[in-house]
Image (cartoon, rainbow, N blue to C red; front, side, top):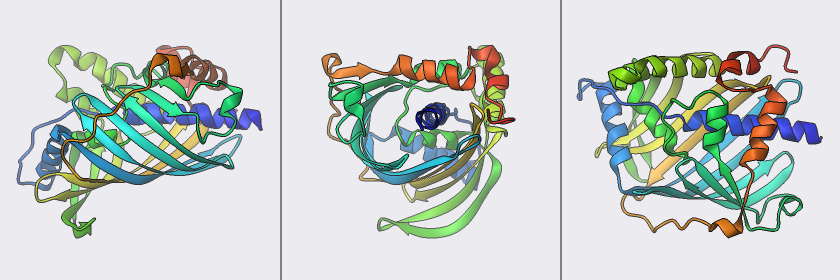
Length: 302
């Protein structure tokens, strides 16, 4: 059971890293459906802050099969970019009810409500540097300035031509237009400065190898003020010999300045970044960027 738990944890950590690799922006006719989605991505990103709530489900199949679901809620402040998150759900048969703090690519996870956390440390917080996982997966050249739960707003900036209006819908009492969008990851390389495009193409190639496609399919609900009110994303991935399916749905509301997010002090935090990196290497055979494509294939599931 320990081996199953470790594979699930390390695959989930890698999946989180992939979600944190947001994309850039591009120009488009602002009156077209594509232009409206890109504008909403930019306007939402420029907001002072907002609250959010939603659900996430992760299913992992391969040599072992596990799944976990959770509801998440909290608040984002955009300058500086920080998040306070509450998480509740069921992970590997254990109920969790805990809180997180996020700044950049660093997570702090409260040990209160985490099963068997006391076996690891008596400190109240676990600290995890997501940037190490991103580097280990060979995705360091993709932007990952923040890993808050709504980071996939950034994917909307790289939508391709396939943007389909799906009518109108009320979201938490606000009238919205609903869109089905296809994010083209290849667009990203064309959005960065010319001197960075070669490396960006390399990183996109690596990311595409992990998820098995250069497209992401999302839905977005946008209000009359060009703010995203709901986002949904389904993402299949291939990580450390495991098939990982991620299904997220998120509502955004109460736009405006939020209460300042206070980060835990170092003395109260136990850093698990090294443990996660060692686990990824042991479970997936990761040894740096050059080994990414071979190490993350979903062939034998071994």
